[in-house]
Image (cartoon, rainbow, N blue to C red; front, side):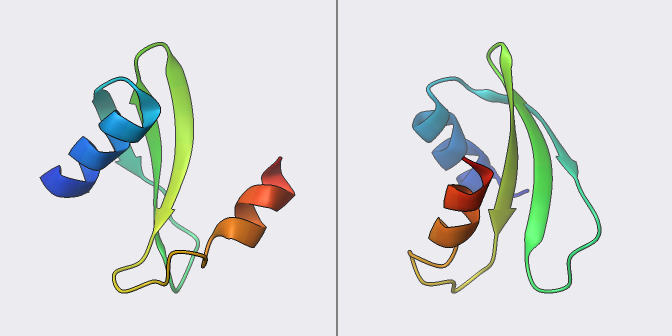
Length: 62
């Protein structure tokens, strides 16, 4: 995970990212297990993805 994405995630999650571990299994997207503050998150990203690309997936996790 590059520094720009790490910083953006920290801002969005309200705490600095303290750990980002790559998660394998996908072919199209990059994925990480992230720790920040006292919580965890799963992050998917793809360079050039449209803003709405991950909305359906996020809703399904809800």
